[in-house]
Length: 328
Image 1 (cartoon, rainbow, N blue to C red):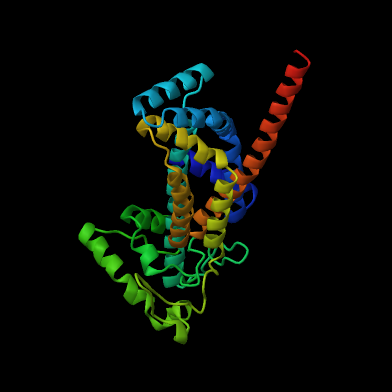
Image 2: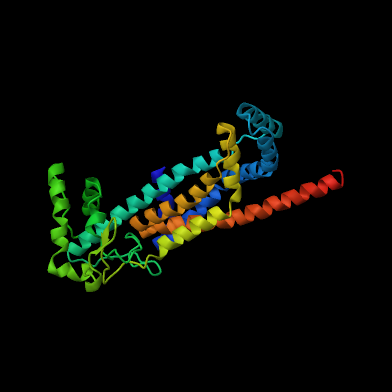
């Protein structure tokens, strides 16, 4: 799947030679392809939400008899022809897409970062991939990140990427490592290379904002900062808005919890609404701006889809009510 996603991204990049725009177009394309699954999931969630009043009656009536509560709940599901897990299954099918997308973004980012590093150390013009306020799309949108590749971003790149990229670049001697020890020694030498005077301008920090210590980590503000932390903040806001527009998802989880344990867990939905934005903040802070851009675009498109689905379901309900009224 990774190769398929990469080929689609490269296809859009050939049409619009800007990776930022290509990623947005790719995200829109993937969302449109997944719309049938998404619609099925939202429809199941809405049916579960519409069933909540009847479930509440059952829960109040059999609050002291868990076995009877589960039995009556299952009978209601069967009578309404509803599978409480049907709304989750389409969503689970989209999870591999997210993981594959993360792998594809990492693949491209690793190749571009190695290319930029080798261009810099060999005295070639470094080709950055800017997008709006972001100066290098393959580094995080963060004032604590330099525009040029950092040691932390380079040390996690696999050996084969270094060999493959260096072998494809003109005017650069291909890298070769006899064994893993030789590759580890090469990686360990990168900080010394980045500390050379000719590269100081790329990694200079603001004197008053160097080695700022927080509770769990330390950071510095670079003179040539790569971004302003806009995408991570947008990730949180868009993720929260996308979840807020799907109240049925929390409602759909409650009946399933009642079936399994006999007690509703209203705090579970709220916990998920807090955890997902925080997870997106972490991923988009530590990952490349390209992946953060994908995450924001995906959340925004999901929110727009939810608004359209809500109108569609309302129109369907109105049409059914009119048909019932006229006896059709």
